[in-house]
Amino acid sequence: MTDKLSEWIKQHSIEEVECIVPDLNGVLRGKVWPADKFVSSMNNGSLRMPSSVFSVTVTGDYADTDEDSIMYSDPDVTLKPDMSTIRMATGSKTPTAFVIADAFHRDKTDFEIAPRFVLKRMLGLFKEIGWTFAIAPELEFYLAHPNANPDEPVKPPIGRSGRSETSPQPYGLESMNDYEDIIEDIYEYAKLSDLHLDTMIHESGTAQLEINFNHGDPVMLSDQVLMFKRIVRQVALQHGIYATFMAKPMENQPGSAMHLHISASDENGVNRFGKDGQLTQDFRHFVAGLQKYLPQIAPLFGPNVNSFRRMRPAYSAPINLRWGYDNRSCGLRIPESGDEDRRIENRLPGADANPYLAIAASLAAGYLGLKEKAEPSALLTGNAYEKDRTLPRTLDGALEAMIACEPIAELLGHKFLNAFYQLKMLELSAYQRVVSSWERDHLLLKA
Image (cartoon, rainbow, N blue to C red; front, side, top):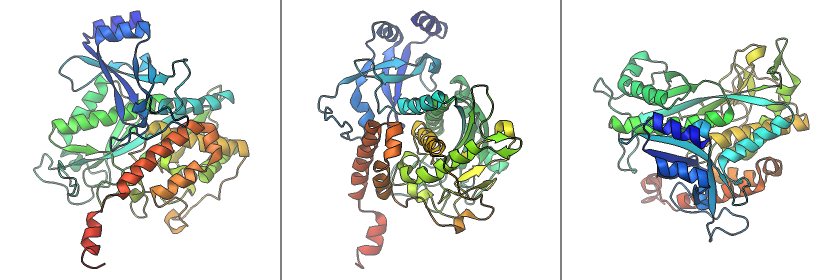
């Protein structure tokens, strides 16, 4: 393995290697090694990092995510690079490669709270019953004017025309052309990093774009979603603007989602969800599991306070788990498809979600539906926004429901779920200390 790595590094004249681990929020953390030091460290097993990198909040604090209370000693985890992920890094002056690594305890057992392991654990349970999955994410994001003062609202950037968008332009080609230079650079960088991108469109929001990924292995697609985010931010900054994957960056604009198209196959590659033009019983059980359990584990696909601002009627985001054929008001949509590509589209995750965890949550809920032989609600033909809301309205209520969901904890791991809960509770506490401009505006002289 290291011989092939050395040859690859030499072939591409690599001078530095970024060894990356995604944390619980999906933030990329890691170290940069000189290329020769990286190879020698792989040989002697000395690629290490403090385990606390998996416990960093979005505010930069450390949460006590260990049930055994050993956070104070902060032991190292050993990193094992997944060599299938090594790619040329973009945006560096020095020829650089990146590789995504898995984390292990000193005894070589998996580090239980690492998001990549949580997803692999869920895929392993399905493999035991002969199932494999293909995932195709659709990821939305906004381009924005530089926002150096966080007290100021986010605004659309000035495009090539010299003007900012002021109204929705869904599928607008002329609006896309206004950001053509940025889009071309995104595709060029993505090509250098071997990302499997499909089409890009202009979404409903002002300066809101959406990228579709080709379907593939869930872990690989999660890797690619995070690397794509990094590329988009790099390119935007090079063009003097911001790119954001916040779920709801602008008050009166639609939120940004990460829709997940999920299909399953048996050991012979036959789709488990469609047969003879009908929905299979497996498909019905899987969907019923999504309907039952996803509302209980909303923080795994809506991880931030801001995430729940997106889930509002009339802004193309679901409020419940109704399902229907080609019905985008539903949280669960069955796209037009034949038996060979029958799939369910989970429209709940926000663009701010950690892809490993959003996918793992979806698979865990579906797995429970299969085990329980659960039955879904009737297919909906009308407007799902007219039905009762079944999703939480706030992060604090969602966290309490999640930590009490024992069946999901059994599947994804108690240590992981506790670590995620502690991390998010600390972030929530930090948020709740902030006095907002709304409070000052309406309460300062009236309360």
